[in-house]
Image (cartoon, rainbow, N blue to C red; front, side, top):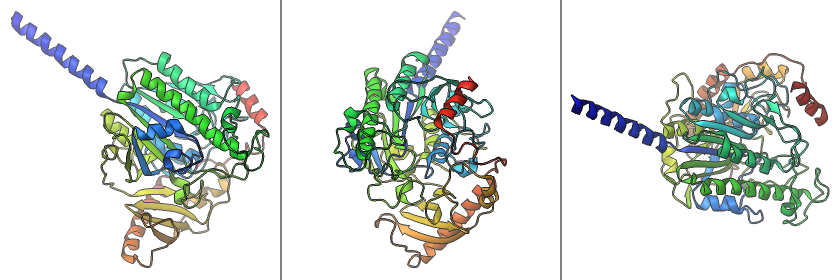
Amino acid sequence: MLIHVVCIVALAIAFCGQLEAKQKRRPNFVIVLCDDLGYGDLGCYGNEVVKTPNIDDFARGGVRFTHCYSAAPNCSPARTGLMTGRTPYRVGIHNWIPFDSPMHVGRNEITIAKLLCDAGYATCHVGKWHMNGNLTDKNYPQPVDHGFEWSFGTQNNAIPTHRNPENFVRNGQWVGRLEGYAADIVTDEGIHWLENEYDHKRPFFLYVSYHEPHEPIASHHKYAKMYEPIGQASRYDPEVTSFQAHHGNLTQMDMAFGRLLKYLRDEQLDENTLILFTSDNGPAITAAHPHGSTGGLRDKKGTVYEGGIRVPGIVQWKRATQAGSVNEFPICGLDVLPTFCELAGVEVPEQIVLDGASVVRALEGGKVKREVPLYWHFHAARGEHQVAMRDGKWKMVATLKGGSLAPFGDIRATDQQRIKNAELDRFTLYNLTAGPEDSDLIEQERSRAKEMQTVMKLKFNEVLEETPVWPEWEWPRWEGKRIGTYVESLKKQN
């Protein structure tokens, strides 16, 4: 009898040991998301002027994707797709979200943070949020409601600029004016959380969302003055030019990212941590700062052409990625949720309609067969085209009847039914391996075009069926109000 008891105890200990080993094998995850970083804005993507040594070194240690896409052409929709694995229009995020807008990622949406947290991961968000209208208003679902146990960031941009921002919120509480620059402030918080705020027996998911190089840009002069004084004076710092401020901002972010990488190495966390570095959309290229680069791709932020949605995408995970490798397989922000879930051994609930796919094989240098093509949908697109779909090397772009909505932030009550009742109109077809999107091949590829039109129409109608209509409200509720008023509102809510 004693022998049986000893055997049972031994088996139980062995089983517990296996469970513990399995837990340890689960990878940590770090997403580093930049804001308005263009495909051609980094040295490792061909920029010969900008200085991004840490990112370039990171690329040499991992896999650099040359066809990485954001989930949408601007901020809030792209972040929504990244977190949910769903085309943002399904969630009702039709545009970028200004302060106090009713548009938000609903409590019913299941994010990658929620799935990982429920599976035992420690979870943290630092930096720009931009998936609701107010980080201190409990009427909105907040990061904690979407699975983040710790959150420190801003509703939208760092204001009044990246220097000494006044609008950061930690776990629902406004923290007041902070000294320093946004990239360093965000990195410091991420490292602080890793050191002090989570149970080190658990695997972790850290979401680092930098503000750089989105306006209002402010760069330390030690970085800005590394560059030639080209162009007009910066709108936010007359002591440097807009060129110096923009490129200095990239280098400033690169240095902050380098500190995060160093911490992970020093603590020996990098061996079992998958790190994704990417951007929310293409470069803004505004009148104030016209210096972002698409690397020769067509158009820019706000469009469904390549310059608006193709972004840097670098992954390093020493257990799987081959150092210095390059992969041309198309991946997207929508793929993050199913990919992380596969690696963490987490089942995605059957009721979630995902638009992304697990790209674990692509991380290892292979290819993935997608069940459905990549898809983008954006009524407020700059230019005449608002819908796009990529299937292999082929990309179809379509217009909507009535054209694009006028440029704006938020979602206006007058546009709700127009979005809900939209119809596809004219189509064009491009071969992305044959050059930029300037040769429409729809007449030469009629059979292929017909097939893709059928698939696009089905997808388009399916998404519009699911997209919610937001309640009518007085618009613009926030437009034109001074930054000082916004900060005062944060004070009152605390």
